[in-house]
Amino acid sequence: MAEDKPRGLAAGLTNYGDPGFAAYLRRSFAQSMGYSRDLLSKPVVGITWTASDFNNCHRGVPRLVEAAKRGVLAAGGLPLDFPVPSLGEVFLNPTSMVFRNLMAMATEEMIRAQPMDAVILVGGCDKTLPALAMGAISAGKPAIMLATGPMMTSLYKGERLGACTDCRRFWAKYRSGEVDKQEIGKIEQTLATTEGTCSVMGTASTMAILCETMGLMLPGTAAIPAVHADRLRAAEETGRAAMQLVSSGLTYDRMLSQASFDNAMKMLLAIGGSTNAVVHVAAMAGRLGLDFSLERLNRFSDETPVLVDLKPTGQGYMEDFFAAGGVGAVLNRLRGKLDLDAMTVTGAPLGDFAAADDAWIADEVIRPVENPVRENGGLVGLFGSLAPGGAVLKRAAADERLFEKTARAVVFDGLADLSARIDDPDLDVTEDDALVLKNAGPIGAGMPEAGYLPIPAKLARRGVKDMLRISDARMSGTAFGTIVLHVSPEAAAGGPLDLVRNGDLVRISVKDRRIDLVVEETELARRRVAKPPRLAAKDRGWLGLFKRHVLQAERGCDLDFLTAEFPHEES
Ligand code: FES
Image (tube, rainbow, N blue to C red):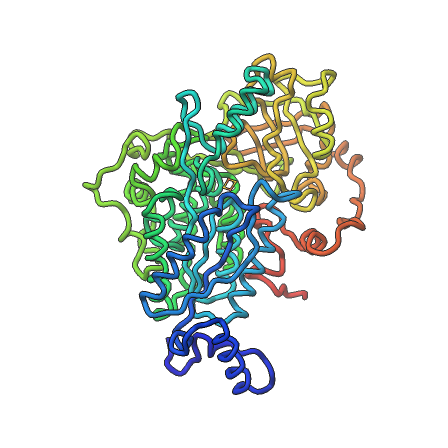
């Protein structure tokens, strides 16, 4: 850091038209909080405060912040925490996805507006790590991430349960009548029993692992369970590392490269990670003008095996992944496929943190390349007349018997229509049909995790466990099924999905990476009508801004004015 550049509380003064007065007033007011003048002269490390009584996954944040502060103080800095929105996945209406960009904007602006020389980004629940990363990338100040860590599992009648693949499995059993009301009540109390994020390879775990792979957090820290003492030690170490960043001045926007994102994409495939990561990391890449597209995913997908055997694609939980060797172990397994020169927040390249070849790795959890969970990557992008902008399928969590299929569409116009009719005994549906949900994309409904359409009750009771499902929505990373998601352009933006009618044929070919609507163009032209305006009278405030500016899934659902291309030439 340049010697003559103001730092700490002397930087970024409030505009009173008199810098001397502004500095004097700030010092005075800061002393009112009880800090010594000596401490107030130190470099400042900001720490995002994302604890909230509406966010169970962040229950441990106060202790993490305390430990991170220890590290900053020990390294000679002044740690100051500050609030940003906290997004508890299951506590937000209509869906946390609508608020990811709000959190990203608030994070960016507070990092930039407040006098800090570096920032520690504390987060964990699904949208929080991507939001914090997006904000920090755009803010351009030195940053380091600290994940809250995953929950531990619990035992129910001798069976290990954890959020949230088991949540869905038992709910499906309840819907089909295999589990009664009393038992589902007991299971409900056993699914999530500690602080931390969902305990499988859901979106939160996926994002933490990808952020570690991109070098945004200290190596080896993504998978430490939330309640493990190592998590607090990692927090303290993160505090020390933040002070090193004050010296080096390394920022995310300068550190991240196309190689970082390609490594993340291969890691996503190898861990059988969440489809949501495709959207979130695309948004992060979009802040830098880098590529995290479905086309690129398809280039890597066939040559990157799934190595990690965790739910929902496999058997284990995040505590097993941590004990098996964590990210460093996967880096070792993928050594020949990654660019290990990609930089990390430590100032050292990623390759320095791959497990040594003689390190112990639990092979049954993190498989050797010669014995993968599956030969090719967990996710695949689909394109075609139904999804010109692309769609995604988590093939690792799907039924291969449904991969090459032409099916009759059973269409739901939106979320309300879906919940009103899905269990109607008179619904004209068979297990060979495709359930199609419209108007659940970013503009239509904020892109909720509604893509995991329930199997109609009458089919579920007959034992049907999976069928082809297609929508412009997202799906929880903890879910499984043959489910085509993120269809783009979405129905509400006038995409071909909007033209699908009951009884139309849709064709999927995973082999050819295609998803098509088998209807004559003349008929589609007849159906095409001018779309009503995107905004309704109720769309005021944040929701109105979101709907006006949100990009489609392949652009990460970021707001157009926050991407690297903004300002656009015509503006
Ligand atoms: Fe927070 Fe799953 S609900 S990570």
